Image (cartoon, rainbow, N blue to C red; front, side):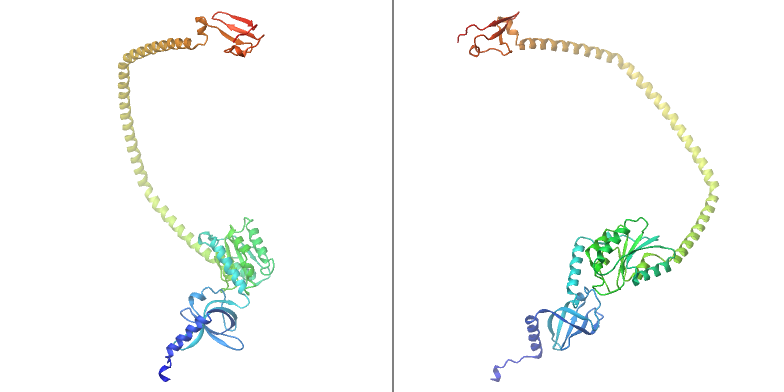
Length: 421
């Protein structure tokens, strides 16, 4: 009996267990709470997924976790899609995670990915559609809630960096029913004004549901269609929305958006003063150099002008003499050709007249031959009915018909008394 036993090595056992797990269970969705999350330097994530009764080790490699749009942390309830497997060297059972989403938000995440893919395929996020931000905007339009922290942060940063800068708030609700439509309408309104140089669209942080208005298609299309450059500033640095991809620039926070929108005024003034000083010194040096060169330029220009005038006068004289000689030769040649031309013209004219006369006589003979009345001179006549039809057959006539018979000289009117066929 002992000789018939199948003896496994540990490695063979673990390999068989791994095969059974991967093929028997396969890829599954699992919901649980994150615990003992570790972000490795390689970019891979390792953590435990647990519920009230059990736990399982999980690994999510860099190429998969890069598409996760929220920041996982211990205690966060998530839903993961993973492959049941086994790490053979230690014989430890684990899930290899391919996708992660916050629990209860799978449908929203799916909508996000579908809309993102759709708009990307249309080219709405293409880099060549992005507009550059103006260097020194005079007035900034802001689309956000009038009562949120975002507008306070934006105003504080803008006024600190560039006092007296124009700020126009287009107040909207940034979450809840109808928020997306109001945000899109505010963006379109700011585009009807001529005094807005740049636009900040956004709000403070929140959950995926709170930020969802900025994931709506109507908002993305309004941003993409804006003629005014748009900075999207929605949530915190880890939050990404469809608006971020559609905008010309994405800022991690509303405060960062304000910093991107305008430079520091004092720094600009310092730079302008520095450039003005450099320009003034450069201009003074150029004036000094040019003043020293003026006498030499004047003398050089006088010599150049005199030399130029002499050369042009010589060319005029030479051209005049050459032209006079050419004209004299041309006149002489034409005079010599004149008698011959007159004789040739006279001969051609006489030949043309003789040829025209001959053609006229030939046409006259042809016309006479083609004249249908010429046969009358040979004793024939032409008979017509009263309405002008030529009579070729007596059977067409009836007693009493009036006939006109034309001879070479004169016409006779007659009436049909009797006809014979």
